[in-house]
Image (cartoon, rainbow, N blue to C red; front, side, top):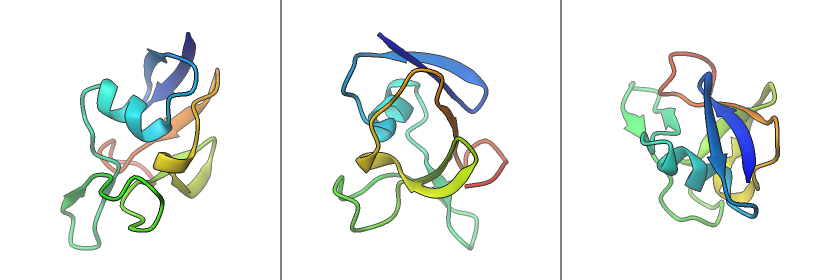
Length: 84
């Protein structure tokens, strides 16, 4: 299992799972907020729509659907009230 932190919550997933899938497994599915404040979630699953942008290990605007989970990874989504 791979263990990462999503919005200060430990989540364990199988190896090879994307960050977007881990966010969904964790129960939220929300990756960011639009400029108008609406909750957003991954749409295309291949990095084109950019709706899956999150902060990973302090780096903003990372594509969750294109990033594989790694042990110790820190993920912050727009659903947390902090930077994404």
